[in-house]
Image: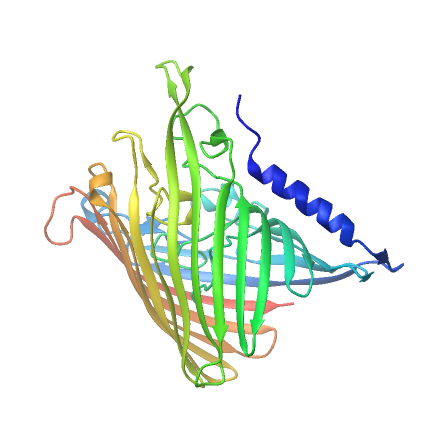
Length: 403
């Protein structure tokens, strides 16, 4: 029988501490603020890619030929509620967020899956209990390891192309320390372990089968710089496990928990102001078995070789804000799985170049255009004349209406 995970004890301790801090609730209802946006995306791709409305990697010419696409969708539109609870005398500030969108599984997995009948999904759903220096967040939020996200019209923020991270259920404790004008923020979280698409085909998520949560942690130093904006430097990492069973040819379990596969990542992120209106930002990372974190080009476990897929990569971006209504970005990124961990035909490298411009007509209506060049290389495909890779030029226009 497995031992009770340590996270249960942590949660129990937090509940005990919070109950000791509880104060008197002022008789009032929670304040609820509606927010969100409506968005239309129109995209032309010079080469077929996965998966149409969004882009993760490009199909190789040697298999699919040269095949362009045009996609148009409004399913990145989203809505949410910001909730503020009544004040507590001597207690924490309690807030919550509930946010949804329309990139559910049925509508995101294929451009053929009812592109005008989109599936609702939860993006964010958490409660936050904040004191002066400590806070607890419980629910679904962005991965704790994420410090900086690239400016992108691309819905996936260049996931599986060098920019890792996603959202998942977690229990996070954060500590803020102020040292003059410098601020240090540290956080640790126990998060749901999401597996690599049920590799053993036993009908059970391989991450859930491990019986343990994953652990994520981050430390972020924010300090004054020679410009009016602060320098931000973050170091983060994660560790988790997936478990695979041995299955028979008729798909019955022969041996339970036969092999465990580790997931880990280390990442360094930086936001570096260069001038009052110019900044550089980016991240570098390394790890293994990172399918659930939008890294490794959706390759985490190689069941044939019985090994984790190692990968490394990163992204960099220059951000220029010449005026209140304008924003310009240029950048590049790479996701590079280790070829030794891949079978023939495996996705060996993703690398992109991008440039985008944003125009804020007013507080509600924003326009954006992004060009990106994505090159996906494959292991062992016939070389020559670009046939062993997929190259896509993507022209992406969007309009937002914020409310």
